[in-house]
Length: 162
Image (cartoon, rainbow, N blue to C red; front, side, top):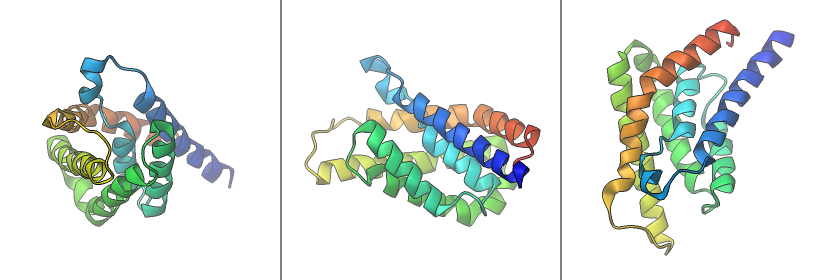
């Protein structure tokens, strides 16, 4: 029982660090290049522990991210639920993918999340840029994915999170 509680805190801590990285101030010119840390951490944990981190966890993670970013409540939650759903359906295949193939899927999932969020902002009447530069975050997330995957896998194995 003690080990199980310890393992849950490792997952919470990784999400907490992802939230901190998601709200750390960037210069205005670099905002479009900020990696999507919370979706990447969610993808990892859903892929690694699909029976512990799933759609409910994604919804809660998204609501917390909405509050932290001050965005429309449910905007990030919807995107993260979609990411979790796709990852849950593909988690056995994802484990067999190479780092490059996983990065391609991260690019696609984060890109869909960003497009959905951008579209929902337009529909809700918020002022958004007409430029597609916001998609650069998907590219930087895909570039960072192999390193993040290795780091989280090392932490999961070191602390025997299962």
